[in-house]
Image (cartoon, rainbow, N blue to C red):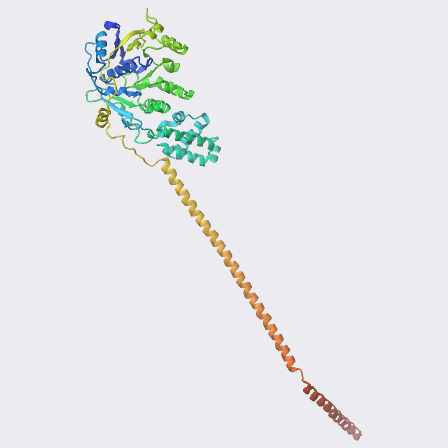
Length: 536
């Protein structure tokens, strides 16, 4: 094979070799098969080939054994004899062990560099899916995002979203008039979902520094594509978080990478293990988004490969986009299994003399039915193929080996320290503090005004009481003066009243005066009359 394709496998003696055309590798693919049939080795061999040809890859390591991609296989390994025999059987004369440049990632930051994004970048649709919200609750969440954008509030982590929801709940009546029903019950339900998301480790995923997708697209100094390995063993305990994260990653690649059409080789190949988790209980809106991303992301030079146990786990609209297919053995013990076998058989281009449905149940470990897109874009006839042995180690790294790679890779400590800058939580808290301070100041002023008014009222009452007391005092003084005057008058009258002696004397005087008077009077009269008569 030349550098325009990657060898996948062949029949015995090297017959009917199968190769993945790099020019068609961005047309996506499917690796399916029951547990223990060889899917991981197939995946590992494809990643080995892509890395050697200079194509970066991203793989989700749900069992921990894909970490071996970072190390070369060993002739002393138990699997060496099997792999050497397989290489000889399919005519791989130049097969050797080799490693791949690798970068380890981990949402929890335990077995690799932390991967983070912000709440704003995740968006309400994927968050609603992550928290299993209904349509009404999703609508309230969308309103919270809109208000945050309108008010210039950054939503970086779960604390920011929680603070924003509190803000929405406190202003629910006003927002209902503008945006429709915003019930406090829906806000409360979303808050409880956030608590559940925290308990699943979701708070590790949201924050800064956010992932720079360019760090996925690197080459080493030999021109080999970097293999980005996501440690997903712990993440698989939260399957909804796992599926939502990988869908977000695809969406970010779709939004950020430029259009390049069909390049000579992919810009990145993305391997989604346990792919059925992405589609379980997914609402129609989410399925439409997945279909759109898978359909259009190929023009960004990204190939998406789903790894699952049964091909029926992939919705038809998505499965129709998967041109490169590797089907390992399926078991047909139940009616559903039999339906899966029939469905898988119908997805292949028929090959003369091969009963696909029967062959699927008869495949050995490490053997698969393979149909890949040819240079002209048409799928090749399905062929029963022995998968090539991988060059890298089959099996996990030791913790010490992993740690050496994490500390010496090109990423360094770029993502290892969490950054917490001012965002919605801090701003809303500051606004709340300012509002509380303003309210306290207003209350203090109001209380002071009330106290002043009350004091003025008391002062007025005191002044009125004092005036009333003064008036009463004056009235009392006047009354007392009048009483004193009356008393003095009475005493004067009493003093002026004659005593018995005075009365006797007065009586005697009057009597004497009366007698004398009469005598004087008589004398006067006589005098006058006498004069008159004498004049005559």
